[in-house]
Length: 294
Image (cartoon, rainbow, N blue to C red; front, side):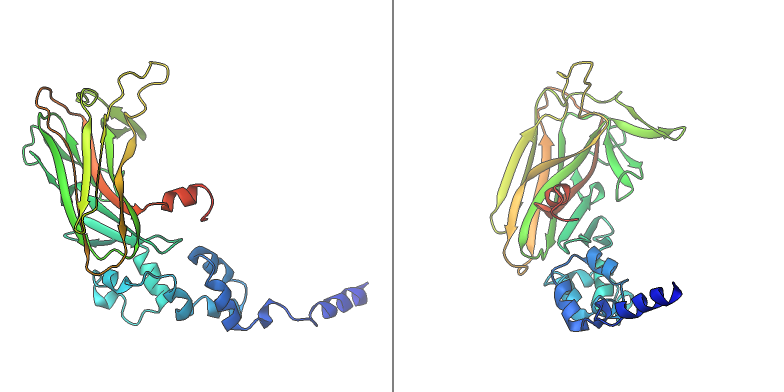
């Protein structure tokens, strides 16, 4: 019995295996795989591990102007880094503009994403604590949101100039109706100040330095929801899409101006958290949701 098992083992090792595939051939296959897939296959053997560390593989996963992102990072943090380490560095949020903006690479596609904090925007009346407060929270990637108690004139605007690589990008505002907190480990929401968002819509708009623009209007509150279903917009973070813009070249840098406002002074409004503005490749979330990208 032991001899039979030994002969089977010997026969199994005669033919070529994965370990015999040349490293450069493995690298060619890796060009068609995503970074997470490459990292998983690197565990197989030495050839796969070597190909998974190849600069030629990771150069193709980085955006063509990744040096513009590296310019935002202190040089000592990436000195002597290989391309794989550069990708890993840039796939984590890179803060800039007094830490009020962040840019990063999507871990699966290597496409450039950006977020702008409420602290990086101009908010009418933000300096008056009778109307606005800064709220510390772990629910924001910036750990702080602007909370509106009550105003008559509501206006938030901002601008960012950045060498976005060629792609189609979506601009959206991340907002929350009601003030939230944690009590006994549970998330609770207070809608004491939430009012006025069902009377007139809020206008969202953006424009780019090359003449592209988009706008939309939306009521933030839904008072007509029945008691059984509840108000689906209250107590949840919602991303309000403003529109899309196209970048064909990273030079010159694209300037994006964006704002949201509700300046009808016939009624007051309040009870709103303003977190951030996202600028993200348009079909990124949809592809992941549909399983195109894993």
